Length: 386
Image 1 (cartoon, one colour):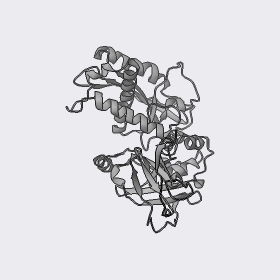
Image 2: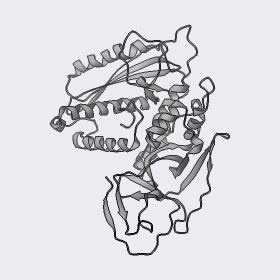
Image 3: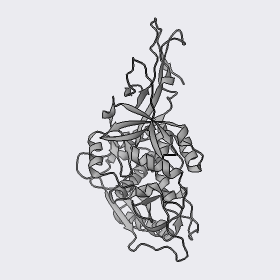
Image 4: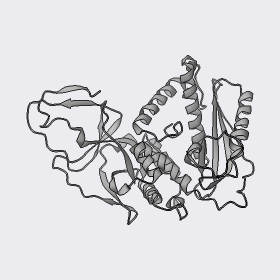
């Protein structure tokens, strides 16, 4: 849900609330009791625009998960990439995927319905492949050749069992004889630029895409979870959050400058190291991302058991069991191409930085170097800054 709907860099705060909205709709209108996935008839009580949005997002998410299950890794939205030659159509697929170790890429178009008959929708899926995927095969997309593709249709009209209908390439299309060797470096980075947007906000992701972001000027945090280290996403303290003020603002009380909020998104530290190295690597050189493998299935299963999620590319949504885990403060060293731990002095009141749960918002608070508050009578005022 976080990756599929947006062409522009994504604000992680907006993603959190949008995902919660989709989660609410799915909880209300998806039948989870039987083994087979299906949409409940209650969805028809939604306004048509809400129903269309829910079905479309669910269909895109199903297509995404199917590609991940088949060993692919998300790369980018097709519209974000550049084609050196234009096919004879203005219609295009939705997404671009790649397999670790491959130099070519796959195109994917997502279709979804909650009203069409199966026979009618099958024709829609076939048309999606013929008109939106096939015309682009064999063409170079941001340096990589699109050799094959899929049109994935989520048929959700049945009240008892949804189906995934797939039309795909039978024989991969080769590149033209005069084309340079396929180089998916730029496309691979697109995936992690989306992750960067989710973790740190659209401004940093846009600067990284433009080549103007300097990681060594940013302080990062890492947490140990599932026996691995993870770079965690941080957000600014939300203006709409609850606040507490004292009579004397200069003394004690609540100070949001001492809080950094984790948005639960994370990237495996070894993958983050390869990505940061890739940002400084010229497009015609060996890309550190090309050496990455998939996260193993056992790790993915453990994350699910802990209430989180780990994806094959190293992106993760941390589980709530990370509460109280020690936080490591890191800086990026561009000369060594690695993260270096920063020694931080904290007060005796807080022996080490830890993740603490924030009850005012669905997020986590990181507290560092908090001064011991003065002992005084406080007049507490609870309100919203907006």
